[in-house]
Image 1 (spheres, rainbow, N blue to C red):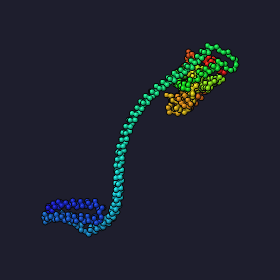
Image 2 (image 1 turned 90 degrees about the horizontal axis):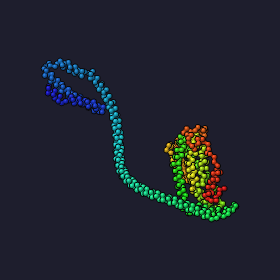
Image 3 (image 1 turned 135 degrees about the horizontal axis):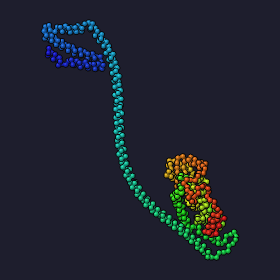
Length: 524
């Protein structure tokens, strides 16, 4: 018996039976009905073999116990089990259960086949999608490879181009430095040449003026030594007057066109330098004088700008009147091939000292006293900047003798800022498009700016300027400024106009000086 039990254990039939049961359970829904039946029969056969071996072992074990050994155990356990297995009632019930199980297995087999078919279709569809995805992936990988190759090629070309560009930039910088050095040397040479030419023009002008003065003095000396003819009381000019007129025309006529052109250029350069000095020095000196009486810098700058504008206006009017008087004097006795206008202009240029600048200064101050932007409050009399106004009047008067004449640009508060005409002051709003007020006018020649002015720009400049003008017009006279002191002489704190002056007396005095310098010419 022990050998039979050992062989049963060594064959591992029970383990194999358990494995087959587990495999059948796992594959039950995947197998067909025939496959499941085959598996069940196989398990039954294996189970029967195991039961046969067990019954053999049971028999051997009972024999080893003796003739009556194990009877009670067989009666109590084996016989009831055998009776239950072979009873009719118990046999019919498993058959019905088997039929139900067969029907259920058939239905489940059909469902399993349908599920298997749908899964196979899904698997085929997934396989097709997987294949297409693999194809797309291969194409993308190929494109990525080509893109990487193009990128590497582009990087190589860019690096080469960058190196070439850097070399070219270095070469161009070297050329630029050499050209700048050449330009600086040429500019220095040109500046030296310009200085030499300017000195030459100045010397020629001085020589021409000295020669003219020498000839006039010699002619006057010879006339003073010779006996004078008897004057005739008639409307016609005497021979002496005609001779003096001829000498005057000889004095005014330049020796050559080159001398005239050089003289005009030198006078223009001199006037531009004076105008620049008036802005750089005279304006600041006038500001210093006005700031003793007025604290507000805006008012001080407005006063100086208006004084400059009025000086140009008054000087141009005085130049027109002066030129008319000279033309009226020279026209009856004009002789020679020279045009009358040229002779008049030459005479004006040679006798700029006859300009009555003090009369123009008084007119400027009178115009400033009634200007609505600066006439209130009456802190200071504008006579304190008399020297500044006089210098601007002289410059403006002399600028009218140039060909073409120079003039200042028109400026109005609230106008659009023109970068070609003006520079912004340091306290300006550099983003503002409108001019708040002007500090210095621009100098023009035939509508072309040759010297920029200065202006203050602020946001809301137009409305601020309108409010300031309205407020200044509606405001009453204020009391004496607190900075003024009674010990200051020559400064009037009232806004009364300048002292009256006898214009006829002044004009007669200027006429006498003109007659003393130029001979028998008399203004009518």
